[in-house]
Image (cartoon, rainbow, N blue to C red; front, side, top):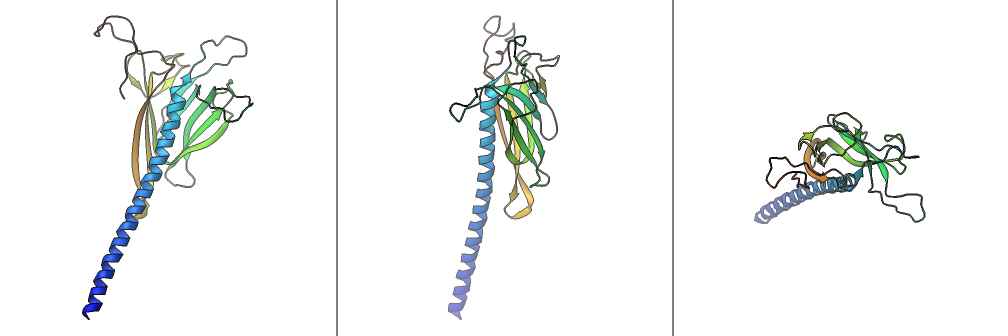
Amino acid sequence: MVAVAILVVIGTVVMTTVRNTIKSRDMLAAGDVANQAARAVLSRLTRDLGLAWLTPQTGAVNTFRTVFVARNEDPADALWFATLAHRRLYANTHECDQSEITLWAEDDPESPGRLVLLHRESLRIDEEPDKGGTILPLAHGVRQFDLRFLDGRTAEWREEWSSIGTETPARLPRAVKIVLVLATPDPEDDELLEESTWVTTVLLDYAQPMTRSLFSRGGQGTSNAGVSP
């Protein structure tokens, strides 16, 4: 009887330990998937946005007007822009570093209640910056994709931006703040979701420098004032 009791106690302890180990493994695995997805998305967007550009000469022959247009939507914003971040993967292909990028989100057919963040890249700059090219998913399980834009002239953050509008014509924002919220299934209950938030700020290399106030320390004029996230 004593031996049986000892075996029962040992079996209970072993089962509890195994169950806790499996639970911890599942939680770490779910967290790793979200971390890898978020890092991949932010790395790609940092490269593309960092080299965003606008065509300086729009009147030249065979030259199309590039744009930087962002639309504030809930829960995911949309963005169209041209970039110099394209990388040619194959030799002797008719490509360069220029491309058109579109970012937007749609309902994820595999994950009800969540979104899939889509990335469109066109290797040809044309008069239709929102059409053509290759569309690939950047991230699944998206709950929020929020963009904010730093105006280099007013030092204010804007919810929307348009290089063809009247408020910010023919210029880029100095920086873009990205907020990405991903939802992954709870290891304990598949019907529950755990949300994780990632935030980063990208400086645009080809944007105009920040305008320094005449009353700021260091004199008059403009300078490349630093921007903190």
